[in-house]
Length: 125
Image: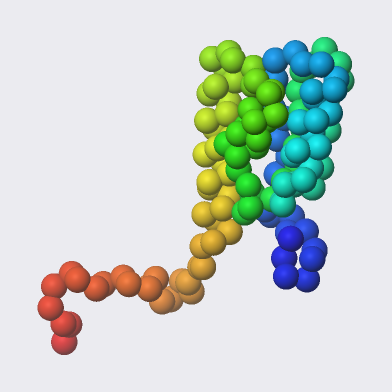
């Protein structure tokens, strides 16, 4: 959320985390743990049989790795296939890119970015 408590749409991501089968009580406890995190807007258990949790969160405050850590602390194991491991690595990369892009301060096209030209030799005349 921004300073005026509105949701910054550019920072909000929705991710699906595939998990190993789990009891309903354990799954509910894991979802409550995620809902308590700052930056989490929604947690949804996908239909029975898909073994997944869908989490909507602010990528400036959280990332996929932190969500997985919270799930693990609740006793939830992520699905452990090659595809899921690659997918989680890509989600972490996307979250990092979102955070970097939001922090970037663009410069005007007619001005060089701050720090450009420093240390490239002596003063120019």
